[in-house]
Image 1: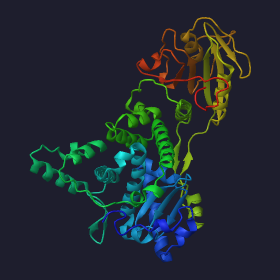
Image 2: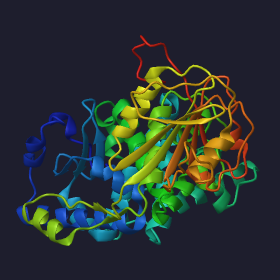
Image 3: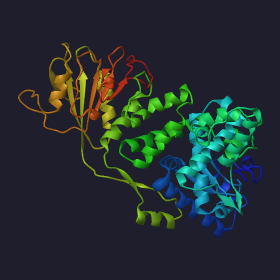
Image 4: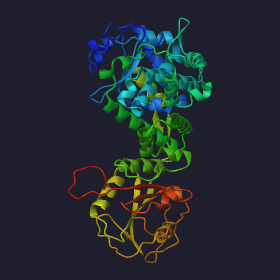
Length: 475
């Protein structure tokens, strides 16, 4: 039995936005609802603490988590009004038990991630790709959750078993006289499963499996899915850069599983800067969302030690009031020091300084030190006029930031958490003492040498816009 296969979904008779109507629709008894809610809460906590940072973040976006018999199983829905909901049938969750609920919640969260990454409509409309998604999601779920098989209800497995599909694939290709792949190679990447299933003469395509697949129009609005998917992956990436082992391992696994999925997926990962988790930087290219990229990189460098914890007292109070449990952020609180160096060897528009000032102002607890430089270092305050026009010398910036080059008889005696350099890059390269703290913003037609250094430094190309251009992108 697969998710949604217990009967046709009844959601179309209930408005997705009407939470109370969903909860009232043929309600289960109160004891069953309470048990199902406890199972759901414990499963979500387990996912966030031990098994899946991605799933935990996705469910943090589901502002409504509704027990309802309007669905037979469970579904994550993303509607056109930007709302994200988790709907779950209380009887179904109680029959599954904790391990089964954890499996189903992971499964549904992973569907949203795949919908974000593999957004091509033709691909999604292919029933063989639908089967491939079920195979890969359940395989990853069993591995990440440490479960030997699919969850069961009354001794019957719930969902598509990857091993059964592989046995059918093996028999089909052998009958055709073709060479099948081994099990591990068959499951190496999501697209690999899809390609291999298409080699079959008769792929075992099942009926629609998940509620949201049956509700294609109402269940998963692509714009909402993309917004939530990008937010979640960006948040998990920041956690991984801060040293979160669970987030790091899960993202690397997802990167590996989607490495041959095409240019769009590669571009999504490149926009996030995810390849830095592997120790190298993707080649610089123009990306309209570079401003958000900069905010995320700064956050990852300026918030050390932050971690997720479960606040027991607050959690108990929320549970008593009937609210969902939440994870709180804890970590050392201190002022973060940021150096921003503007290359003024050519003209630098005032709007560049204004934009960076506003950007830094959105990051809590930051003390910013502003420099302009060409062949000399000239500290300034936002609002003051910056001067320049001579040659560019990055070594002076490095030596000043590292306390070796005095300006007006005074040395810089702070220890910065990050250094941002906005420049055209045309000057002899340097190697800072702490290159992982340097962020280079390269103007068009500039030299992106910082990312070719060993070790590479964070580097991105920015796109200035005209002063009267209304676009929020660029400087």
